[in-house]
Amino acid sequence: MNEENRKWVGVLLGLILHGSAHFLSGKRAAGLKWYCGLFACGFLSVALVAVPGTVPLVLGAAFGLAGVVLWFVMLRQSCRPVRRIGFLGWLAVIVLASEGDGTGDIQEDINGIEGLRRIPTSGSCRSCWCALDEAR
Image (cartoon, rainbow, N blue to C red; front, side):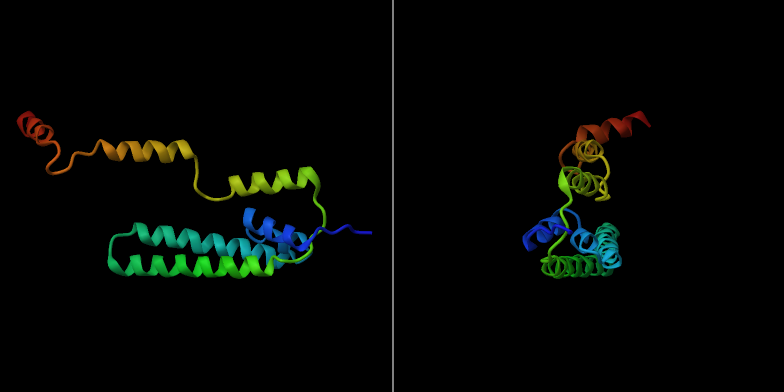
């Protein structure tokens, strides 16, 4: 007999990894569609906001809002009994969630932020700009 967890476990799985409750409850295609759809909304939102201009900003915000709404819908539908996955299954879900978020290495993000602090602005470091003009 297939043991099943309570319905709240499906919601917890959905919080950790998008679509995993659908996937583990037997609806593998739906789980993959939720994962890919929410990943695409997040990726498009970030990519469009990074492009200069008003239209990409509005489109990026729309994709971000759509992603949040779809995330809540996915969580609502994740309230379903799933089969027990055990310790190794939970470990696999956590590893997939931490590696599959598309954000890359956190150290690269920190280095990028630190690099932005060294960019002189128009009023903060006139001597830097004067030194560059004198070198020419």
